[in-house]
Image (cartoon, rainbow, N blue to C red; front, side, top):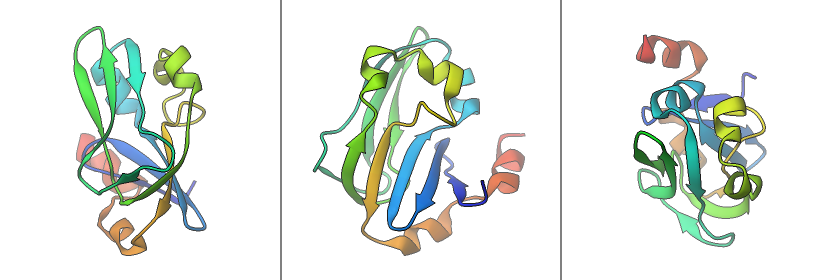
Length: 122
């Protein structure tokens, strides 16, 4: 998936048109351990790059989903609230967190590609 970018806060973002799907990386879920609770923002709310866009709690720690881009939340993955453990199994595929309509596509320029992210976590 060449249209996937990564943040230094260990989120991945996949772009289709002006909508970005956002989740946490496999590396992030490994660091967190067993995810037991996920809280997502309301559809229709606005998130800003660098601000908290959700909560992820594991048996080890609580963490924030940090917005890698700004925009309006157009969809949330309600499955995660019922099955938070799916984040551990499918962090970079079906266990996405939110979909956001981008308000500033230039924010994508500051994110890493797959190779840069692999080097970042190495």
